[in-house]
Image (cartoon, rainbow, N blue to C red; front, side):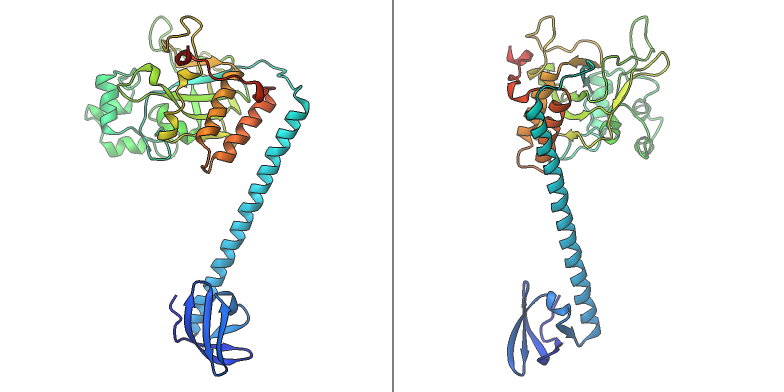
Length: 346
């Protein structure tokens, strides 16, 4: 705002001319000499611009500054409340260390086809339809089962039956193209449908997952090896359905305890650093099935390493609270959790 040479009126000094505005300092020349004021605060009861339009602009500026101050104060208060809750949980956990699971539950990891829909420097993708190059890769090169299904819209697009605009519209407003295209929109992972054998077409179940289990979403880049599989998001399950003969099982969350990793962060969290197969534990191989189960210690190892990669980011405080909350409600002593011992560590 250019106020230089504008006429202002002061209750005591009378009319004066604005000499200069430097940041939050306003210099006005009155007949009695130069006076310095805080800008724009001085217009809130001390100064009035003679030009009504200028006065209106300054008052709008004051309101905006006040709104920003209130927002900053509210954010500080919210942070204080969150930190207090976080440290209270730590204190309670350290004090008792006696809490144990009353119900045995398993944590779950999902094998997800790579999806670059909605990809940015903030997330891998998994929030929209894949790019044309990736669609062709999944269908023609990697021959993904669902991508090559006659019911898959992406195959219809590659075959020329629908346009790209129509394909993209199918994923909007809660629409569905594939499991992966909606994962980081809905924060929901599904057990899948059996694709081969005598049970082909039957929905799969999730019979070991319960509320407060950790869900880990994993993928690997096109043309990469299984040992390169990485974790791109985690969430604390607060809604789960085992599944039946008609519908597949699923896990999802609406809680605050959900974290997605940036492309750079995700590649520091290789899934096979934490997990190993019962048979041939030194070999990083997923084999069949879209999901597998793992214990609380492995879950704590993953969450602890997420805290490390989130250091200095806006998710740092959330990642710390996530780790402590998970350990507290599941009776895990984080101070005694060992280092990862998955297949890549053997």
